[in-house]
Length: 414
Ligand code: GCO
Ligand code: MG
Image 1: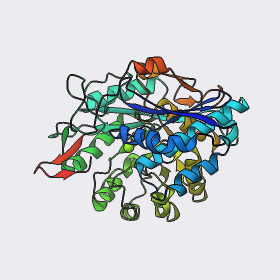
Image 2: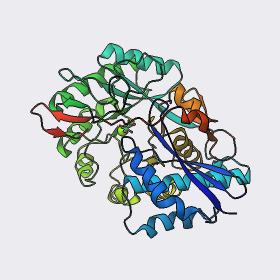
Image 3: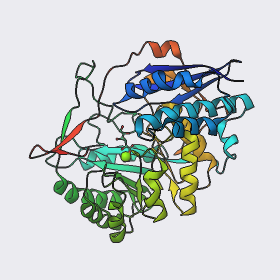
Image 4: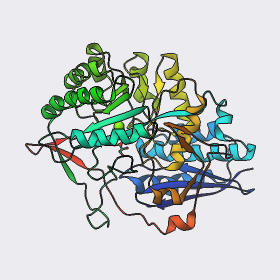
């Protein structure tokens, strides 16, 4: 049995997704997520111009060897584009292997270690009343963990805050931006940022949240790489009274040593890694126990094969998973996260931003959500099938994540 076709499908049901379809010579089909938000076509080109032809004729059962061939064999290795492309191949091959065996993928990863995956939702508001109503909506749906993002007085747009979402409603607070009329964007939008106002405001919001929602609810917060090490340390320290589940990505991701400073000053649990793409990005963070949760997704980190190795490495140090699950990870990538999360012992929590209805018409999923818990379902393989005809009705439309500027006009991390 070998790979006979490798096709790349680009579709935009509400937002852009790149999906790899691998077909075997006896007709099995596997799907892999290759979506890199705002840089989608680079991965599509990597796959179609450089990888697809090398896959034809390969034994589809040799997943580890194929991974090594694409990673070690490339010479120019790592980086988000390469690792997303490898991830898609890896996911598709696992999908095929499990379909051929007739079992849901988690069975091949060791079987279920738990009944379902505890998830966290995203709540946000420009003011406290809006945030609190959004949180209430999630609590009513059974969520026990909520990410809290707030507007900041004096700033127009702040990362993670929905301008339009109603409580409990599905929303994409940050689809990569398009032109106002929905047509292709030519450049990113610009947002503004002021660290001092943010650091002053956020602890006040968490004080109100704890006061209203009590001690039991797990609260998370994402600083989205915007702080210097000492600012991040101060934020982590000032949030200690509110007992966070985690503080995410407070400093720019390249600098693993920056996290040491935060750790020295605070016992607030730390999560990082959504922009990482290799185990080496975690090496110091894990061995020196500088983080508590691994935040990558299978899509951006070389697939299930690579992510499982990172999580096994983390497990030795008592570090858990908190896999990245925004809407720019496609339903295929989310399913990969879920099967892995169900199987590993050191699962922590899964991020869950439900995809839009338009997305879920194109990607038919078999996973289920019930009272704050997700399950990947029992369909053979990953349990997601792409409707190619429908996908073709949603052509790629250029879109970019925003950039951030300080009040003096200089560029800041978004
Ligand atoms: C998160 C993330 C995302 C990213 C997005 C960028 O914690 O879910 O920060 O929302 O901003 O994946 O493409
Ligand atoms: Mg994040």
